[in-house]
Amino acid sequence: MAGAQPGVHALQLKPVCVSETLKKGVKFVKWDDDSTVVTPIVLRTDPQGFFFYWTDQNKETELLDISLVKDARCGKHARAPKDPKLRELLDAGNAGGRLENRMITVVYGPDLVNISYLNLVAFQDDIAKEWSDEVFSLATNLLAQNMSRDAFLEKAYTKLKLQVTPEGRIPLKNIYRLFSSDRKRVETALEACNLPSSRVSICTYSDQHCLDLVLFPFSWVCSGLILLCSGFSSHKFLIPI
Image (cartoon, rainbow, N blue to C red; front, side):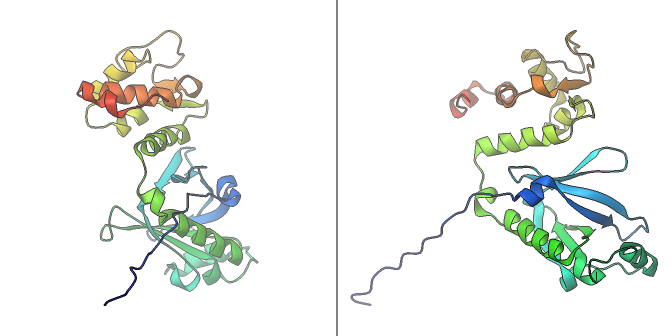
């Protein structure tokens, strides 16, 4: 139409902001459909908003990649246990409100077909609402869904840091899982960075199956990536940090 002005649509992208509540951790009770056992956990989020993590009964850290989260529901929209005994366990000794109002369901998976559920019960109604809203906000953040190369490297490093042993060391098996396509090349990259691998043990490390976290800074991840890349052309895409 003559004289019409073109429309300007501006979308302000907000950076990821993790609240102090999520960073410090929130107490929940975790339950599964195929079990009558409930597990009390403290669910935390790393400062960058990459992962949820908690410690299981075997003292091992479990992670949930926030980028895989499709939905976070609470209250009447959350899944409820069908087993009466399980419902009784979840509601035992709680005076923080009705059980239905404290239920949380986190839906996650690589796509909208292959999904799984993380079922939680909060101790207060308001905590369930606040936590699920913040989780959904993190999962749907456009900047988080379109991260830079450096952010992906930081995410990989954060995953290694969150899964350390009680002594504060990174198990070598976690590094191999991170780059599972070619274990031999990972071993070669570790040795080239003067770090131990399953083939070579360096005397300065007390445990050849683990790396000290203080001796494995973020810069080593970038150096290792250069060595893992097949061609020298990768150098032009990596800037010094």
